Image (cartoon, rainbow, N blue to C red):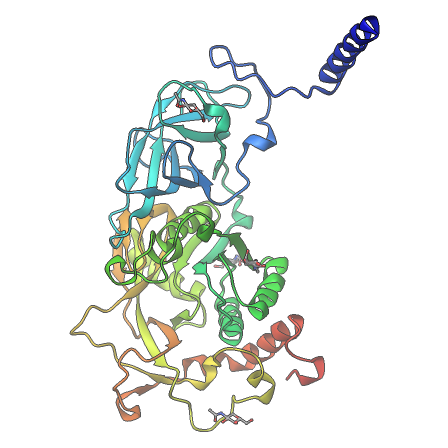
Length: 439
Ligand SMILES: *[C@@H]1O[C@H](CO)[C@@H](O)[C@H](O)[C@H]1NC(C)=O
Ligand SMILES: *[C@@H]1O[C@H](CO)[C@@H](O)[C@H](O)[C@H]1NC(C)=O
Ligand SMILES: *[C@@H]1O[C@H](CO)[C@@H](O)[C@H](O)[C@H]1NC(C)=O
Ligand SMILES: *[C@@H]1O[C@H](CO)[C@@H](O)[C@H](O)[C@H]1NC(C)=O
């Protein structure tokens, strides 16, 4: 009996040793004094999420980008930090085979946070000598203890795409949330962007309504739309409003300030211009047929401009154009607003603050907010409203204005010939229109 047990134990040890050596199932040693060279970082240590909690802190990391525009730094990490809990941090890199020594991090809270406890934050890092960095993370101590519970962020923008692969225009749409299901306006707007020369629309998605989900899946398969999962509600209590005093919550508008910046950096190497606007807004040239022609005319006269400000103009959805020519029964069963029916534009009340949105040259911008750039390497230019303005169909801003006090503006109609069949096609693909109903 005793002998049998003894043998069994020996056998178990041998078999166990065999499995461990042959299948290499032990976790990698994290010996920080002389780390064992490894060609690639194990996949399980690389963050696969767009929001990565930073261990031992209240902060979250989003993305890391190569950025050598600020002297002394190589990397910019974009994150969401708890503003009252800022402590020294240290950058550590995975250098194509080994872990680097740490370098001290520079933590920059964005000045716009609208009073919320959490805010968009940049962390700047310097890569130590002789390190071909592929991944980065942050530590709360200069010596790398406890790094095994950290997830590493891949460093993006290390390569510039060739000229032929460059995009001209990328639109950054921050934060889809709730059961937002304004499908018709969404489809019309995306098709309008295409006609205007937009090459890519990046959308941060916390959640959306079922029909919109279907529509977006097709656009994203086709490559026009890039969906970024944005499960911010799993980590924080995001606010649906922009003002902490009024709306409460942990973070401004589902993290809009962070996603706008993330989108701009994501697009920095691959897109000439980035448009920072909401999905119900169309940055519309009024003297040119498309954005290419607009920027080709503006850019030579304003070569060092980082930020082109475009005035927002409201087209209240309660006023319909009288002829009913775009009131198609096939569109009536699609949820959402038909922007072609709204042609009456409010004149901005210039006595109060009048918000803009922006077309930026991303390589000249360091930090952005919603209505203006916060830090840039170039100038700002206000584009005259007769050259370009935002067509924004929504609830009236100045609700007391009568129809006679509004301006008739049929600029969208100039595109109807192509716009209508393209919208039909998109709705049909998403199963919201039958083929025989198309125009
Ligand atoms: C290391 O991690 C453990 C558990 O995660 C924690 O209890 C300990 O305080 C950490 N040590 C340091 C030095 O951060
Ligand atoms: C960008 O615009 C140029 C003309 O200004 C055009 O030749 C090129 O094809 C455009 N690129 C894309 C990806 O649309
Ligand atoms: C948006 O996010 C929700 C929640 O994760 C998901 O169910 C939905 O499929 C996503 N939609 C798209 C188009 O990515
Ligand atoms: C659009 O047409 C439908 C009938 O097809 C009608 O019920 C509706 O009131 C019309 N909408 C407007 C704004 O005229």
